[in-house]
Length: 393
Ligand code: NDP
Ligand code: MG
Image (tube, rainbow, N blue to C red; front, side, top):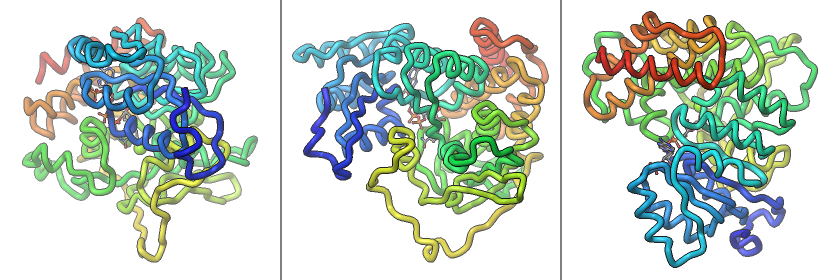
């Protein structure tokens, strides 16, 4: 059912779009629903993990066919709360894949962590276009995802702001060789700190990002620069370039969201205010552009844009990500699994900030990886990395 399709459209130019939003209660998920509300898109299905209160509000507003909860207690609560409606409430990891496979115009994958991999594959298998925010999907199972995209002849459109910028910079350049991808990074809250200074930073400081308001896991990843490491791997997978072709550039203002350099020396980039609704909306409307409620960029207000190198000796996660993609196989899964486990410990107050990078480095040096990338090998490498971190924290 389409939600307020006529009344709510600002653009007056609605595409007939019905979305499924996985991770609808998170930062990207709620902003996706803001875009859907503005343009009057229908919502086929939603998924959330623990936040049954927000999931109930969203279900009552958008009236999806199905809501999938991946936490059992939250599922039972939501099922009881929605008993007066005809909305189907389902539970579990397989159900998340079933939800992703329901026929719709686009599945927005905005769950956090590598738990998003199988739903991405399920969506592609059902020939649903995918708007991909969940970067861990490409880090762990990039080869499988790209193969599924090709086999099913269906698009993946990136939502991560840098990859959306690269995607946009590639438009109209099919067949032209990419010389280099310029992947911009805000540098996070601790840019310029040395190793000693990182020893005393607090969780509150780490969770205060200078430019973006995001979920806790990606905000922590931005502070360690692991986010840029994951994004480097994401770029290699999405755009089929060599890791050496991706240059990380710290750009504190987050206005240039990334760029592509071509053989002739032309550099084409995408600029805009730091607002995820812009890449989210573009993923849905691509190749069209519609009116959005985001602020417009004033270069006079920005004034100065700066570009610097990242300090990979201090922010070891970025260096580890480079090593992992160079090794190939499931090495990026080991990196990602170690990071997911270490970040969860940090967010629970069990380890200090600087231990995240140390644990990731130690784990990548110790845990073997498989050359072959299959779902079973990914799952094994992920489990081994998490186990290493829990034992050595
Ligand atoms: P949030 O933490 O804000 O939201 C995560 C979503 O995933 C929530 O809906 C949450 O449910 C759900 N979830 C949590 N754990 C599980 C699980 N085990 N199984 C299934 N679903 C789960 O994250 P963000 O929105 O910030 O990020 C989502 C993804 O998008 C990440 O991969 C991130 O790297 C990427 N991304 C985010 C950006 C941003 O600006 N936020 C920018 C670029 C990429 P509940 O809340 O109900 O527990
Ligand atoms: Mg990003």
